Length: 67
Image (cartoon, rainbow, N blue to C red; front, side, top):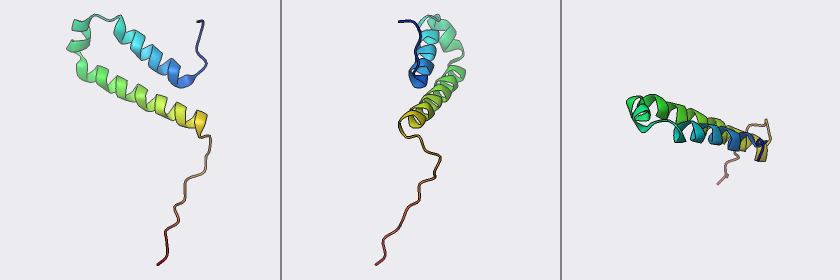
């Protein structure tokens, strides 16, 4: 497959490949930094999914019930 046009899938694939082929000792030596990177990529992927499937710039407005 040549290229991925889904932003979330591309982001997650990049981080997965980066970690999959990196030596384990290298990952463990800087584990907190790598986990921050994973968290940032997951957040970016979540945003990409939201933008793709729920494309809106409107802020949700909640209407409370009246008793």
